[in-house]
Length: 106
View 1 (cartoon, rainbow, N blue to C red):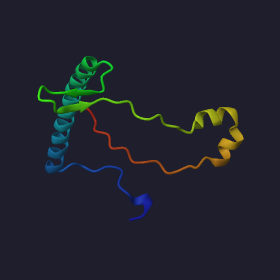
View 2: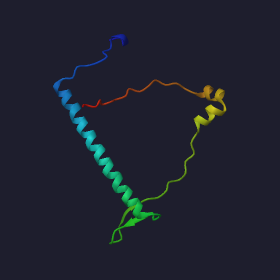
View 3: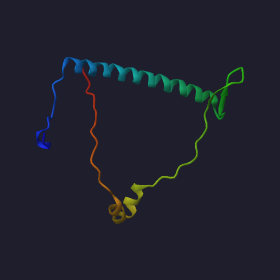
View 4: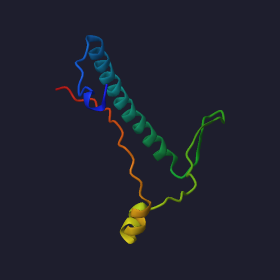
């Protein structure tokens, strides 16, 4: 099949429709669990304050919360503003990715 003959859409089979609905449920569960995880993490971080480790009463380390090493990054936005010619000289265009977007159902 040539590039121009590729289908633009597909009609879902009942099995595929079932999979999409299960995916919606999984994503909803992930969102709920992510929110709950963030609430627990915030509570623990607030309790830790500046402490880096949390131990239980038996002396076992339950978790650590340490600052990572600083990271150096290239600032492409700055280069584009300060020296557009150099920026354009090294910019590389790559093909876009396909986006998997689950549409909301009302």
